[in-house]
Length: 402
Image (cartoon, rainbow, N blue to C red):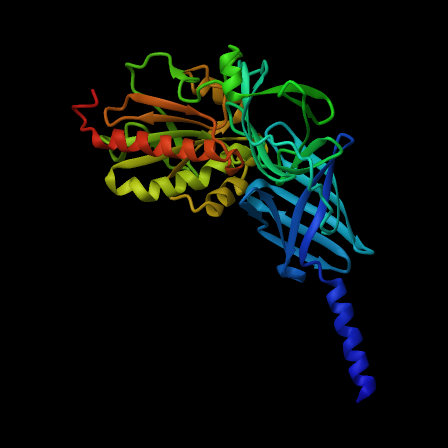
């Protein structure tokens, strides 16, 4: 009996040791840059699952398998997968993701999560809103840097016109905050050093350098301000109705002139299941539609995908399932065709972009991009502005909206 008990105890220890469940300190290698992030594994064997984090948001895998030290985890809604081997407590392999321009492969490595000692004294406060002057290829003159801080620990995001970097997380060490992000997409590392003049020196991915100035000081100094997402994109002719005509995922033709849209408030959302910022926005739009559809709201997503994805729409179908989307989703074509097919729009460059169409069929407002929860108060503000605009348009009759 004693021998049997010892054997069972040894077997239990072996089984526990082989389980991958729990938190992991992971990295992906992006062109020689190590990007650290937190990764979680749950389940085992054919029910194993992997989870990426973007602040509070979780990106849980669709399927997976772990057998004979071989690990495969799939995220259907981003057309991504992790293929790795497990040896001596280390997970090593490659992470594959299909994107708008090309398929990306990142070397992946993970070890068991171990809490690291962090500084507790003489940590400078950088919490708040900052302005980062820049000159982007989208015509922006500045970005916003949103920082939340608890002692040496920081969660932050850089908000651009199309959306943010995802939640950048890290700690203060050796005179600087080192922040990083990877949620299956948007790999980035930022080093943030407070300067004696009150500004921040910000180094992105070891290459690009920026200066951050507190929001109130930036305004007082007349520094360039971030673009207003509600004014960035407009209509070339605001007196003409917004029109669209594409097929849904079943091949059925759907048009802006269909009876179901007549006299309704319609949000036309330019999106793509390859787009990280579109993933940030989708759960909000899904909830918005469920809340207001009975009052006359319709949402139509015009989804532009890569040529490979257009062949079977597997990722787009998984995207719809993941976020519980009940509004209309249309297959608008290849991403390279978007500018030509959205010819009514002026200065359209952001994924996603939403057009607010009134009951009269005319565009009554736009919103370029969408932040994630990593943008903190600006994420909350964006949702409140969306909802307020929808409520104003729903309150109008067809006659009063003319």
